[in-house]
Length: 541
Image 1 (cartoon, helix red, strand yellow):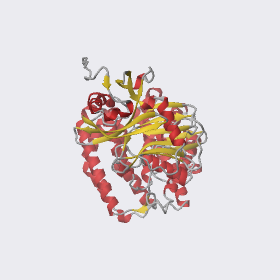
Image 2 (cartoon, helix red, strand yellow; image 1 turned 90 degrees about the horizontal axis):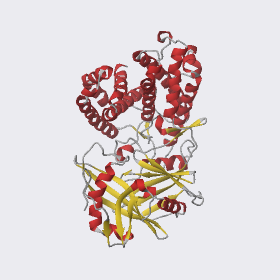
Image 3 (cartoon, helix red, strand yellow; image 1 turned 45 degrees about the vertical axis):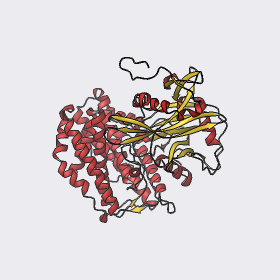
């Protein structure tokens, strides 16, 4: 055993008398691999979601073979237990290599039958990626084996040519095949079908919704408790010009530059009521001169696509997973319990982090704490008996970063749901206006981010820039609401009448801003002003 300063105690080479295909049966190997190796390795990975908690130990929950023609790889389901008495499950595929490839993904030096090499993350091994592609492309219509490969009926994959490891996102890893298909491996997994898999297959295959990447296949495992767990999702790679977040940042920066270039005075700009529906042709000319038509027509199109997504999700009457439902007491109890717990968490976080805030953010944080009783009252003031709209399966984590910009269109992706929510909560049917509220909060973020990122380039003070930004925000919302309400109404998706819509939007905006507050306090205290200002605006309307 070699022990160096500031490193874990790991064998320089772990030797096993077993063959690679029997390595998991070596109890000594499994013990060393889990405790001495993976505990450090996993905490360094971007897809590991427990960085703010203290790891206690790792167990091997399940393992399975991913194989073809003598090539064998292992898929490990790791149960990561934390000192705070909760756990996560992660998917880690491993390979044994004896050459100099995949240096960046080496996990453990290993000697098998006098053959030396390394255990690596198999995502970095082309052989593994090829096997998975070929298993999906040759999948049978019905697969009852523990590792189930599925392909879209009637679709024929071309022969494997190439694969490209796309790197690691927050909770998944993507591989591009033949420059035409993308396979998303889910790293953080749950004892159920992943919502992204369910929603992608339902929208693109069953409902023929054109503005999401088409579903082509998947990889699922059946665990020891007979639970179907999604490991991978194969979709068509759609051409795009980047995401809507970057697009709107550029547009909003131009709008702020116009304030200076045209010497626009805030007091001359007509206001608009929050959530008021406004057609582009009815917007005052002075506002059009400031904002330009481009951003408004893009928002109108985005509203149409969002509404069409919700119409598709609300148009199912056979599959109970997707059939629309009404508000009821059970939903209200679930909602109130969830939000009051989350709200208390944010109050505690804010109190513990006041020292990190200053100036306007500190003032808003103190107002937030002083208003806790009013906020709590608003959260519990959810009377389902007055609501007539429908609840449906929704995107759940809808923001500009989840939308790709195409030449003259948008493509909506990533239906996994809110990262902080349980898998069961992500599948609860909710008012579609919750997605709309998420997008509105993203508009707000884009406006404030532009101020923070370019403030030195503008002549106005930060306070004045925020005033312009709040007015811009209201016009963006008004244009969106006009098209969104009209499209859903024409398709007979009942989202509630005017007062109900306003109530739900305010409620969901408050919920979203409180959720965001936790992220900003933990990750970017300087940006805490954005959700705090959002909360203040909702309370004062």
